[in-house]
Image (cartoon, rainbow, N blue to C red; front, side, top):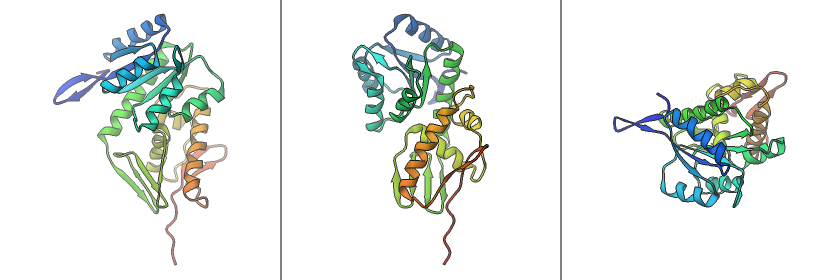
Length: 244
């Protein structure tokens, strides 16, 4: 069933916060989300959004960028700096690659450019919620030589250094690490990690891979854990055990 999770044997609707000041668009989005049995709160400003976030448990935030009291990216950054890992998707008319990268670097899990189709919005919302739920249900730890990835605590330790990753960077590393040495194309990663495979969004994978590799290299510059296989895609290459 769409939009519900089990709690104490009962089905509870998943809770979404929509932060959008354009009333007609907000009504359209809420109509479609409620049709999927999601519980939806609506805010038109960053201040209203923060009040809801502080008092309610949310499964997803849909956040406009251009709001009356500031840029939605500010809220995204505040949440990530506070350690809140609730999935967050930016909704915006800003469609340049620089704007997309800015949003992703602020900690957004997804970035949907206006105008968008309702079907694409539905698909992305389902993917974000489904991935969050599956991660909660399947706690596990993956260990390689000098690298530990804990999907329960969402912590990564590489070469005795703790790694700070965004939610999506963690998801990407976890997926690759579950299939060491297996090469995945950008479209395969987009579908597996983001939950959709629309043409034209491969640059999203590239930007996440680049940031992930930069962070890993800061732990150990001599190890290239996420390797590019030219003309094909990317793979996770675990560090080899040192022998003496």
